[in-house]
Image 1 (cartoon, rainbow, N blue to C red):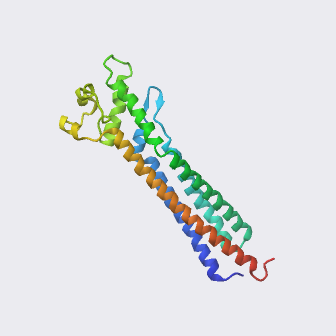
Image 2: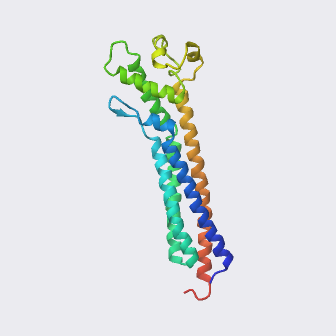
Length: 234
């Protein structure tokens, strides 16, 4: 039998992993159903869905959190039973999850500006149709799309608005007076700010998970070595 303190510490570490997995899963589900992002990403205009690249990172967090909780049971049972096979399986899953975290972090760093740019382009496509004076058939749907952006983000326009847009602000930004429009933040800036905050939160959660996994791998190796070197283990 291995020393009780080693098994106790490893079991507590595995419990921490399950707790961290639950927290990560909760954060990811909150990001997935947050009213601001969900209101914008469900929009459709001219047969095109609003770009959902942001959800890729969220789904990775959901998967990692759920798997962490499930894998935690394997590690906990393996520590209690002092099973090298179960602990080896637990260690393997930790390595895989850690690799996924690193890959997600690299993907997020490479695409940190892409997400907001995609939504800005989507907003601009509706913006152009909404101020079209030629009677475009998609003008009404464009106005509805802009209205969702303006109400959700409490913004109006894109910052370099034309005199024509200023003339129709009462239609496109019904909650804004002329004075409010001059003081309001552009939707471009609001979109960049929104997704920068969300990605920062995702990056922080991924960093916490990665640190926890490193400690979990160390504790698992210590426990496996303790089992291997205990009397009566062959």
